[in-house]
Length: 146
Image 1 (tube, one colour):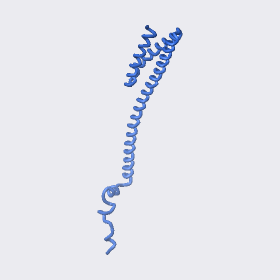
Image 2 (tube, rainbow, N blue to C red):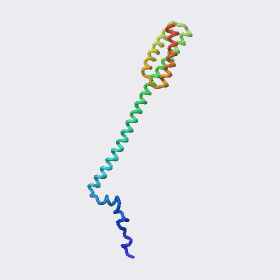
Image 3 (cartoon, one colour):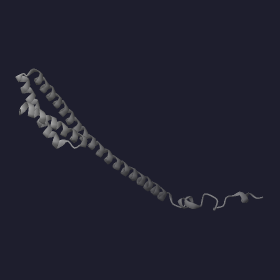
Image 4 (tube, helix red, strand yellow):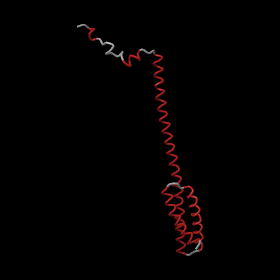
């Protein structure tokens, strides 16, 4: 047996297929193809990052709007509680100064309610505001317009 029997032929070796095509290209073209492939991958990654950042930006904007609404609703809740407490205090004492303070708070809460109606968009908050509005109307009928 001779040594040439074990020597790989071009059909079995590395010189066939894609590798063979790439081996026949000059070094300048190989570098250019590699550079173009890296640029293409970077462009795809940059586009994916851009789309993701836009989604995050939109989500943060929506969160900011909800947070602003939550702060307004919380402030409104504090005003309603102060109004209810002052009105209850008047019913216990029948004091003229307490009635004046209760009426001021009712007027403030009523104005705040009207402002909230133009700002609130969350369905649950709109429904709760409608229920609270009915309560405020009762306070107005009893303590401001008896």
